[in-house]
Amino acid sequence: NKVGFEWDSQPWAWDRSHKELVSFVKEFGHARVPTQFPLNPSLGIWVVNQRRNHKKYLKGDTSSNMTENRIQLLKNVNIEA
Image 1 (cartoon, rainbow, N blue to C red):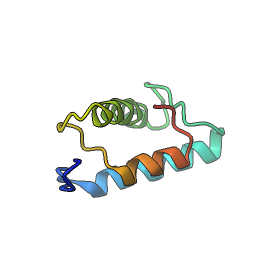
Image 2: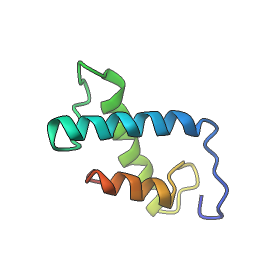
Image 3: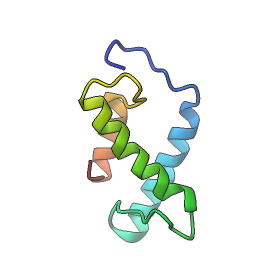
Image 4: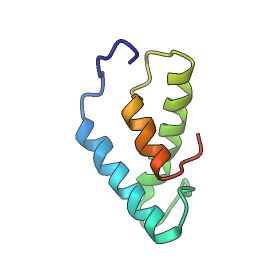
């Protein structure tokens, strides 16, 4: 959160999903993963959740597990917030 404490209890899961997103972008040229992507059904849902968490973070909602670092990583793959 904005205090600097990361509430995410499984950061490795976020990192794994981010790597899957990077692979998707390399293959398809964009980060608009369908919510029911047959090759990786959970990836589209993860992307939706990242957009939602980013919006919460910007509003100061402390329930978001978004961080500045994660925002930058998502921007690096041109994910639309």
